[in-house]
Image 1 (tube, each protein chain N blue to C red):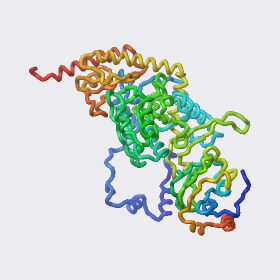
Image 2 (image 1 turned 180 degrees about the vertical axis):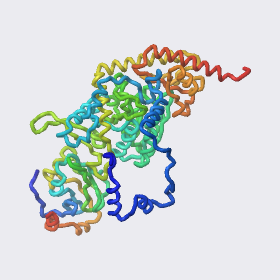
Image 3 (image 1 turned 135 degrees about the vertical axis):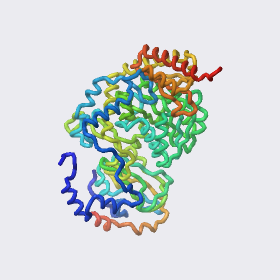
Image 4 (image 1 turned 30 degrees about the vertical axis):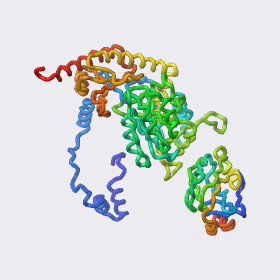
Length: 461
Length: 128
């Protein structure tokens, strides 16, 4: 019998006899009502031999297009930054790759130290005193922050800017009703959260107010003003969803008065990997320390006075709160966060600022050059740092297809998430896109828009 | 940590809570046995003043290095005061459970509920 199979036929028979049934089938017959059973075998193809399976999977994989295959300006929340080899080298070490939850500090010092250093880096990045050891990804971090607000003030309403990532708003809409929360969305004006609507939506019944920095359209929000308006109108927990890379050049959330800063950590040392896994970061002021999900590693001294690390806080986790647990962050998440802290250490303080400045310059250059094209203009005139939204005077999905035929992916069709912008294209920059790549995008996009406009002219006109 | 003790003048709830009644106001806390079982207390999450508590229901949470536990109300009433000093010094619950470690004061809605509580002897008998 294979070592991967838990029970032998003899084991199975012994267990069945023990509970007094003749076969596995009989268990299903007795437990599952006939009306909800399929009554036949699943319609699956016959099994394949290993080599055929390999060939089949290979063919499926070939259907994907990765950022190594085309010059990609896709972003929309996940970004194609360079991942240095040192990250792979450290993440693939078996001590990090195959850990168990580090409840026992005597055997988990390496993992706990990584968590502690990761938290320190996130605290410095966000200018907030407390960071947890990471959560699953950006969208669930936003929803978990809204739940923190519910725990903190017991209020019902969550006000969320339409500039927050659509996936985060969807996750919030999925989870919040279960927590007894109701969501109010505030629209965008000129590319940023409408300040009047924001102030009007927040009142004494508002538990949390959430914005994104930069927002989904790439625009830099006036974080301090959004916080101030929230303070004046009911004083909810103010949550900012941040892209971590531009924090090298933008005012950090802690200095804007934000209570809880969360975000998608993928761009810190994790590849796109067709959507995951990645990690989410979660930082807050001291006031919310005990409402935070996940766990926090702390620094201490052992009995001999040597520096060591322990899990200090895990106030919502299942092993400490038992049946009242409201959070359970998986140990494996720490691996992606390890990539994040190694990336930040690799860049260093100055490197992060230089990267931000580089992105700022290239983004500015790309925006200007693209907006000079016929049939292309800016969707908004707000400051941008790494991504910006355009309006095309042509069918966006068809323009994208034309560009891809030339080996360039020009960006994300905004209409997929924002029906009010069916003609919108979101263009993202990373340091991997050179000036020559941008020039190529300008050439290819200009030609594609021109060709589409030509094709769209009615016959005979 | 203090030695085991169960003051004779207090009333006790089987869930290891004590009550000191003064007219229609009672002070609640947890017993030496409870704090000893919890271990080192690191956080006390109090109710809001003005909220009502129900006998045998949970009114607060106490977190130790081992677990987060509900604190059970021995009597019903309205919270009139919480021990705010526990926010900075939760270890008072371990060090002085009947003194500085008190948790809340409650204006009782039905003083006769106390008849269901245990006197010193009856409570300590449950611990053996």
